[in-house]
Image (cartoon, rainbow, N blue to C red; front, side, top):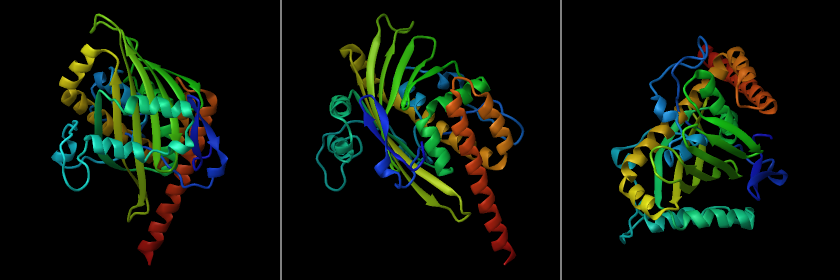
Length: 335
C-alpha cells in the first residue's frame, strides 16, 4: 500500500481507495518503549516497566494498536478526562456529551460501510469510559509514522525482539490484528478508516484471567487526529490527539471501571506517550543507521515477509530523505 493512499472500511477490514491515491500522507505515532538497544547507534534504552507492555484489559486495547504522537501538555490538559453535562460557553468541555458528539460528527461516516457505522456508533454513543489522551508532538518521518500506525504487528515484533513483551499477534487481514498477552487477555484490532489526518480503530477484547471470577468483555473506538509540520531543521514533526471510547458489557465491571477511571487513564496516558517516543526513535534510527534497521526488519518475529519487505522499503526511504535534509543543512551552513 502506498503511504499516501486513503483506506476505508469494507466490512471489518479496509480496502484501498484508489480515488484518494493523491491525498496527503497521514500517520500516527507512539512512544519510546525500550530496555535494550537493538544495536549500537540504533534504538537507545528507556525505563518502561515490563507490566506496561502487557495487554491488560482496557489500557491494553490502546497499547496494542499504534496510537499517535506528541508531547505532554499542561497539568490541566493531562488530568483525567471525565464526563460532564454542565452547560457552558465557548468550546465544549473535554469529555462532555457535547464534546463527544462533536468528535462523532467529524467522522467520515459517508465513506464507511453501514456495518462499520453501526459498530462505531454502538460503542461511541454509549461509552463506559471516554478519555482524550494527552496530545503528543514527536519528530518522525511521515511515511514511517503511517507505516507503523497501519502495521502495529511490526511494533509488537520489535518489542518481542527486544524481549520486553509477551504479546503474541497474528495478522488476520490487511488492516486487522488479533493479539494475546498469554495471561487471559485477547483482542482484535480493526483499522476501519485511515487518511492523512484521521484514523479510526475499532477494538473487541476480553479478559478471562486470574484477576476476575468471570470473563470480562468490552469494545473500544479510538479516533486519532494527526497533523504534520516542518521544523527549522527541515525534519517533520507529527502531532496528534487520541480520543478513546470504551464500552464494557458487565454492569458490575462498568461501575468499577468508572470508579477506577483516573488510574486506568493515567496508565493509558503513559503507554500512549511511551509508544509515541518509541516510534520517533525507530524513525531516527532508520535515518541514521539504516543498515542496522534493515537487519532488524529481516529478523522481525510475528511479522509476515510482505510486511518485513515494506518495512525495509520505508527504512530506506526515511534514510534517503534524511540524507537530503542533512545535505541542505550543510549547504546552508556554508553560505
